[in-house]
Length: 158
Image 1 (cartoon, one colour):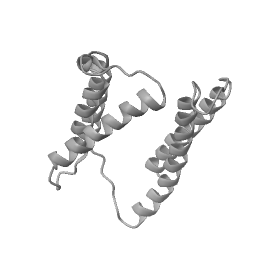
Image 2 (cartoon, rainbow, N blue to C red; image 1 turned 90 degrees about the vertical axis):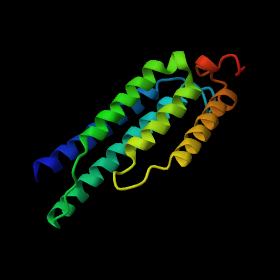
Image 3 (spheres, rainbow, N blue to C red; image 1 turned 45 degrees about the horizontal axis):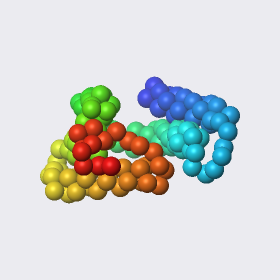
Image 4 (tube, helix red, strand yellow; image 1 turned 135 degrees about the vertical axis):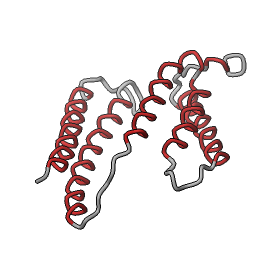
């Protein structure tokens, strides 16, 4: 087993173990209804477990791909750009507000994740970012009755 496969399996195992631990800790939160204070932690824990299992599965596929001559090259510049966007999103979320920051973040992230050989579709990315931001904001505000920061839009949003 080569080092890359071992590292990928270790990452998957860590995600799985942390997810199981988080799921165990989340089970201590008292439940009142389906969507309550424990809902998001349960979703996060289950997602972490699922990601761990998928990571381990992909690590085993990676070994087969390497034997057949396929090589996957990591793009660290994209990783750093994504990390920068996440930090900026978190730093500006309160002052600028969820709706605007989500639109800006998603639009920029779509551009960052567009492969170099593909054309960037600004209208499509903008439409998806705006629609997603509106749907998520309205869902949290009206379905979950949770307030998200509105920031600069406070004069226009209730």
